[in-house]
Image (cartoon, rainbow over all chains, first blue to last red; front, side, top):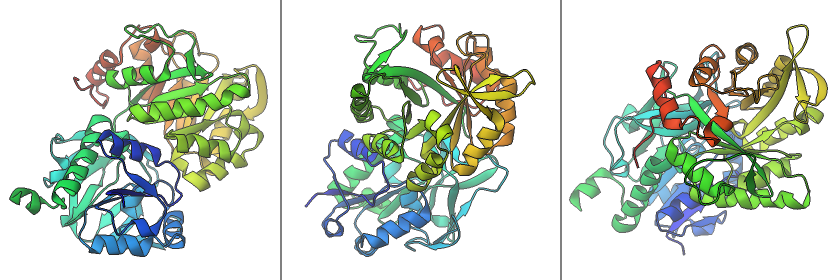
Length: 217
Length: 256
C-alpha cells in the first residue's frame, strides 16, 4: 500500500504531478486501480481535459465511489484543475454533467468575448489562511489553464481567489480534509512545489490538513 | 491579474539544443535540461522546444529529453516539430510536456487538431502558423521554414484551427523572423482579433520595445524569442522590469 496515491483515469499528463510529489521526497503510486484508494493516506486527483470525459473515465474505471468513500473517511485529499472541478455538483462544460457533488455549486464558463482558455500566470489572493499555503505569499503567482471555473454555493469554501478580465473566481477551494486548486501547482515553480510539500507533510505527519488540526499540533 | 508571458524557444536535434545558444555560465550549452533550469531561474514563464531532428532514428530522443526536462523543471513547456498523429501528442504529454504544437501535419490533415483536443483537451494543443505577407496585404501560410506555400490564408487558417480545437496559436512571421527588427504587428493583430484563444507572437524580437508592441498593438498574450535570450543580449529579468515599467502585468523574477 502506498501512502500517496495519484489517481490515473486516463487523462494524460500525470508525470509532472508525480514529479512534484517526488520533489517533496516521497515516491507516490500513480494508479488506475480503485483498490489502491482506500489505503492511501494522501489522495491526489489531477486532471486536464473535459468534464464529460473526466466523469465518464472515473465512472467506467469504478473510481468515483472509492474517491467519495475516501473523502468521507476524512483523510487528506488534493484535487487539481479538473480534479477540483469534478468535486462540484454539476459542470456546464459541453452541456450539463453530473460531477461528484462533494462541494455544492456548479462549474461555469467564462463569459463569451473573453480570451479563453485563461492561460498563464496569475495571482492568487488568499481569502482565508490555510496550512497548505504556509510559506506562500499573498498574491503569489500560479499557472492556470482553463475555460471553466467553479461557482460555489457556499462562499465560505473559497480559500483563494483570482481575477481575470473582471471576473473573480475561486482559485483554491476546500473544507475539512479537502483542498483543491484551479491552477496547476506542479507547473507553478517553487510556490507550487511548496503547496505540494505542505499538503504531503500535513497529510503524512498529522493525518490532517484542516486548519484546527495544525493549530493543535 | 493575468500576466503576459515571455517564452524562450530552443531548437533541438537528437535530444540536444542546437543553433547558437551562447548563454553564459553553462557547463553544457547543448543540454536542454540545464538550459531549461537556467531559464526557469531567470524568470521565463514557459519554454518551447522545437524538435528539428532530421532522421527518424533520432526522433525517439525527443521523448527522453522531455522526460528529463519534466523531472527537473516545474514550469510549463511546449514541444513541437514532427508531430504527425494523436499518438505522437500522447507520447509527448505522457513524457511530461504541458502542450504540444502542431504545424505541417495539421495543415495536411486538420482533423488532427480535433483528435488531440478531444483526447487531451484544447489547452494542450497549440497550432503553429508560419505566415508570410502576400502582395494583396494578406498573409499566406507556409511550411518547411517558409519555403513551401500552402495556398491557405493565415487569418482563415487561424480561425479554422481554433474552431477545430486549438487552445493557443503560435504565430511566426516569416518576413520578420531572424531580422530582429520587431514582430509583424499587423499579422498579430489580424489573428488575435479573429480568435478568442491566446496568441503567442514569434519572429523578429530584437529590442525590448518589440516585445511591448507585440503585447499591446499586436494583441498577443505571450512573446516568444530565441536569439535575444540565447546570446545574452537581453536577460528576462530586465525585459520584465522594462515591460512592467511600461504598465504591462508581468510575473516578477523572484530572487533565488
